[in-house]
Image 1 (cartoon, rainbow, N blue to C red):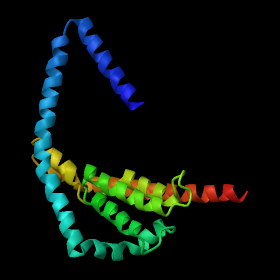
Image 2 (image 1 turned 135 degrees about the vertical axis):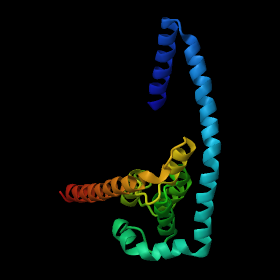
Image 3 (image 1 turned 120 degrees about the vertical axis):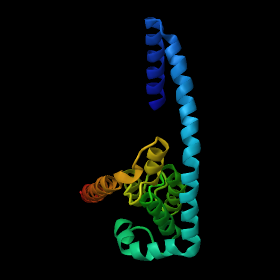
Image 4 (image 1 turned 180 degrees about the vertical axis):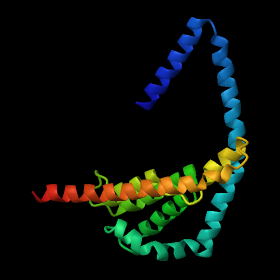
Length: 197
């Protein structure tokens, strides 16, 4: 569906520019946007490599295991159906840690791995389990302590103080995460009541 929306917007823009007799604006805009995207990508590579390297060092140094022990009561509360010693628990910790560090798209491979681990203990393979829904909701809310990707984008765009959004990001992402947890619990309770009827 999203592809159709993008196609509609592009075709409409090109037709309107042609109707106005300014089709060269579309060409210039496409070329300058592509050039800007490549330049921004190169500026972001360094920051993403830095944070991914830090995450790998943290994993090898045992910091992720430390986080796992610290967050274990909260994670067990949020994911009661996942056994404590199962690899899915470590994968969930990695996803949530990467989200907290604001790694953005770098979280995707970790999230896929966590979902695969959760699918391995899912009894109904055709439906998402409660744990899978909770993880997806938490990733969507994305509680962030350090919005590294946003800081990198602001820095690449020439911001004077790219880290000034940290406080606002922390408040908003915390509020979103709390709202998601409450909604997840309410949906579980509602589904359990419907099953009992």
